[in-house]
Length: 123
Image 1: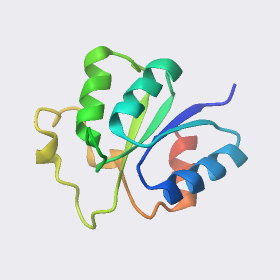
Image 2: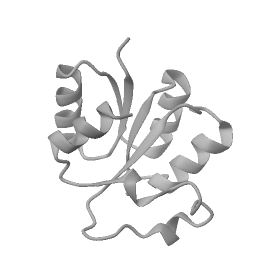
Image 3: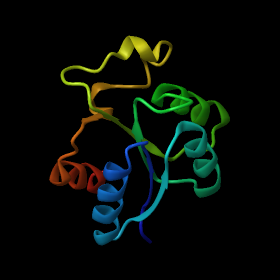
Image 4: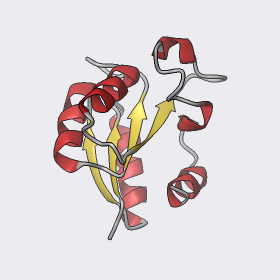
């Protein structure tokens, strides 16, 4: 059975390129353009993996992550935060999540397709 991946990002070009890449590689994909839509789709889809933009309209990536964990909507899901910030992500912004969120959960934008596919294959 194909792994289900939910892509939550407000950049249409990034969403489309990730969706095409993952679909070609056999993943079942769904997309959301903001945090609220992402939470709703996660509730319905129960994805295996979530690719989650840090900066979203409405709820940011940390808020989406908190809500999904609080509701235990996707207990088996793995979350990969996507960020266009260069350098080390600011884990302080995700206050209260220090024991859950680690640096290996971040992938810089633009996303390197090979690195992403390797990471997804290891999950």
